[in-house]
Length: 159
Image (cartoon, rainbow, N blue to C red):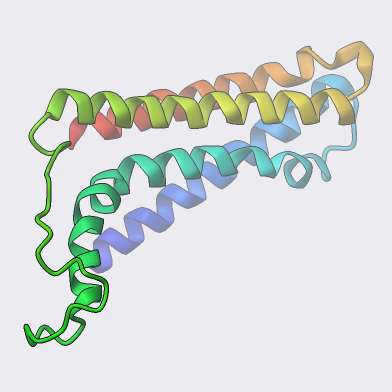
């Protein structure tokens, strides 16, 4: 458990360092203020996080979530209550029995998060970088975002 926590903290640190380095290197190419760019571009990591959370918890939400509605009808599991009228509901494991569909949905969520992140960072970069170097200032960040996408898909397919 400690090892897993340390690995997770290490990955967060790697993302923070590579993202900050890409923002600083990109600004170096354009002559913009380097210290402010990581904070100005940080919002672009949110869609990536949402995509990963969606991919990771998709079956929990859609399949186990059905079971929670049953539990809410009889929270003490006494068998005497049916507050919501859902006590007789059965859980339908629609995604779990269709691994190809589940994998496709997870990949789509991860890719959608990364595409939205690239759009978000591009939009902000156009506003904060000098117009003469707006494109070249984004090249380093583009490489980092592509690395995040490939790494995320590798993680998704390795489990």
